[in-house]
Image 1 (spheres, rainbow, N blue to C red):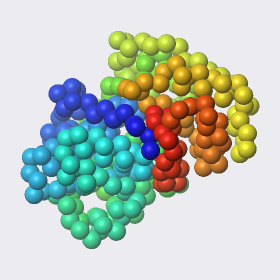
Image 2 (image 1 turned 135 degrees about the vertical axis):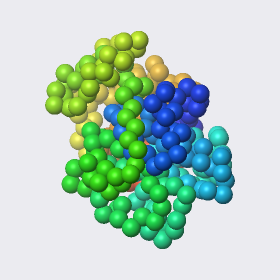
Image 3 (image 1 turned 30 degrees about the vertical axis):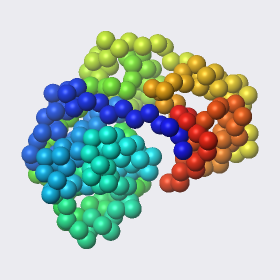
Length: 272
């Protein structure tokens, strides 16, 4: 499996809004756009629960297997018991309706249907963002979550740690209907970045890809591969993952591929 680079931001680097959410003794309703650190806050809250009172174990749930493994590895650097209590939300559905935990922290809460939350025995804190909903026909909007958990204290994160200002401006121009608050773009004034490169190719079909696209991807991998970088190729379907597996074989030293909650180990490192 890939030697993935895990980097949990030190707790001392959290912003004031992030720290407020972390330290709130009440159950929290955490929101904010992509890259604002919702998962980091949920992770540190979970770790802090285990470190402050090991007898009161919290359970951290997230939607995808890949993110679960990432959160587990980040936990492991701080507290092994906390790492053991990280799981995927769908596979834990029966457990949380049978057993009581000191707190259940649900990351990516928008990706679960409303019925998932009925009958949970434990106190629930969650992080959610309507703009990151994966399946609109199978989700729970923030307004629904507020109705389900009316006593949760709202914490809103606005500082973006993932993108540069130029990338955010590009996203805003490309998707004008997307909710990208001006304060997020203005808050990136100290991280202008480079203009993104936009490439138009024939894309991929189930058995082939485009040479121009493939060569560009290989150039990016060779230019940026590092012990402190992770490079990901994201495609929507299993068949397309397998197409890229064939492209990378023999051209990239180490990589792993992930699909359908299955991890397929290869001689691998740093490219997903």
